[in-house]
Image (cartoon, rainbow, N blue to C red; front, side, top):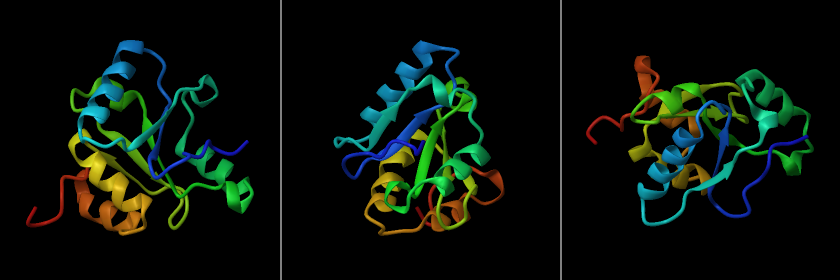
Length: 140
């Protein structure tokens, strides 16, 4: 079964940790407050509880080409526990399985640029560097 596709130019934010409903509410509220425009389509389905990056990559690879999505943002256990709620960005297309963390303030810009193909996943992932967390480009 392919991942759900957003109906618009928002990015798919997939909940994979179901241990704390309040944390999920907080993550969604923080993402919604990060910009005046919506940038996320939220999916909270138990079938994704604890899903791995490799399982998502395999699921998308098996989907019909028209049903595939290019990237997904995971609200995993680290997202729920960290006070900054950094999502895990996952490339499902160019370098399937490549990841980096996205703190809430950076999510709207990354989502918008990826959604309109203004920038590639790798540009943000490369800027995350050794830390694995995107904190802007040099000079930002």
